[in-house]
Amino acid sequence: MQTTELDPTLSQALANARAPGLTLIIGNKNYSSWSMRPWVAMTAFGIPFQEVRVLLDQADTANRIAAYSAAGRVPVLLAGEMTIWDSLAICEYLAEQFPELHMWPQDVAARAMARSVCAEMHSGFADLRTAMSMNIRASYPGKGRTNGSQADIGRISEIWEECLSRFGHHQFLFGDFSIADAFFAPVVMRFRTYGVTLAPALNAYCDRVCAHPAVARWITEALAETEMAPRHDAEMPD
Image (cartoon, rainbow, N blue to C red; front, side, top):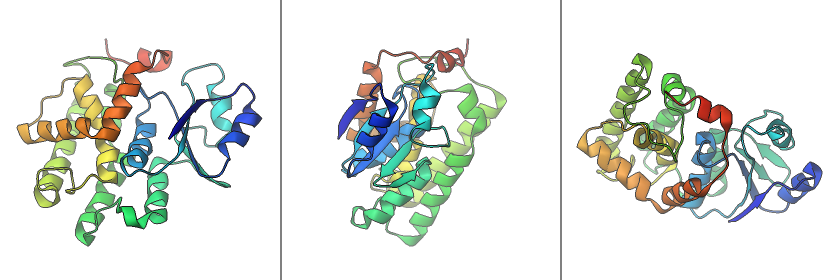
């Protein structure tokens, strides 16, 4: 994987990104939970790609993202002339293109459940997202405990417990690392930042996720970032 910052000329940057192969447009690794999901999945499964990082909360952020996608959000996957601008759609596309990698569980029941929990993660848990924004560099133990975020923590714990007990064999959610684990990796980051207390088995799962080479690399690179995203930091709890 190669990493590049955007060139001053947006048209040239877009032309470079449209080079043969896959290019993933992401935000800051410290803050961008949506970017983390496909990046971790692609890295975990050894799918080669070029990375383009767009810094969030800058004067030109919207224009730079708009050069890649009219949706105005990251992540965005460029695959030749195709543009895929949703994290779940990106992972589904990759699973179709690389079936031999088994990015989804091979068992039919496990695969159906993996897709269900990813879809729930994708569309739900708004209270957790609001009260506990991802900020890997920060530490806010005990903060962000609204009634809504506590309910979300409880539901996520239920999902993890069921997946691990039915399919995970006390490893990852469905045994081997899958798209489902990549989708919940940003939640693990939040739980660590905010010091969320979990059952021992779920804490052990979080430890395994953090130790996975793809996740560990994302964390290392997030900690090395020096840029600030003022709006994201402003959303942090007092």
